[in-house]
View 1 (cartoon, rainbow, N blue to C red):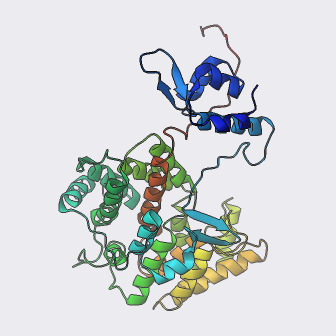
View 2: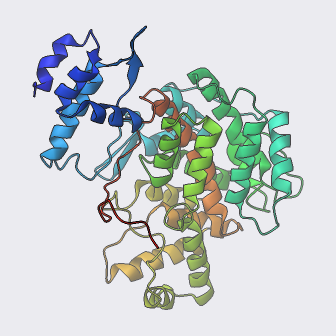
Length: 418
């Protein structure tokens, strides 16, 4: 087999099927199997029957195959996706190289979203939803049963907004950015208002507040909400974000990619964790002590919600920022004390730190919001990050997010079942 390194000087010309097979060390039919899996792209020879292949692409696949066959721990059994959006290391995280916590403290959610999408800061930007998009989303959401949860409504609103957009299949960056700037406020506007007399104007956080709480919004609480949205805008390849990238890899439009993310978000191990922490805090507040609540959670075989994070050894930096802001929020003191009691009680047996779900629970519980409010905040915030990842994926080779199954069933041929 030829050394893949030697082919780099010939990157200006394309490879035949035979040459690609030789470079990869496989049979020609296996080359076409790689194409069907989305691992290679091919072009038909004009006027001929064969196909040609990009030299650089084939060389990269050959290198990857060699590493995996050698058991390289950096590639074997672990999906790795190139991204310029979020970096997480040493108990901190950055958006396009800028400290995400500092960015969220100094800029609005809309400004942080624009930074994530474009790498440019747009001061005082506001997202506005077209009347036709909002009307379509509200009509669709209004037919759902009363017991439908907010994420149900957001998914339906995204689908309805897509149906109302004749340009949804245009994946050009400019068009997708236009979709992003209108879809997020459309999702918010499609949620039923909780507070009477609520008006859809001003920053997105103010508009969202009226759909989460029946109380008058004070500035300290609005700042917590806006900062929470900015902090949650992205967090590398979380499960929902991976689903979005898979959809975008198949060239699903932005609305469909967001819908894929919303579907995964509803899992109890992802977006729904904030609601579990909210209910736990209310229980602690009702009993006046975290110990019996923690005991019952553990006895039932459940993990304590709001504690620990697989990417941080210490306190979640998002939680740290929100806890500091909650100190200034009227009526938040009891829920803050309950959260600290949960952390201290659990720390006697396990060195777990607070994560963003616990901080969100303090905010939602002290603001008169429903237990589902944390998941709603999470979903609205993360929509911007999902679109940032979709934009990145649209620049990659189509269908590259198509892993091969490792078949472990009985080998064929087997007789037909009787």
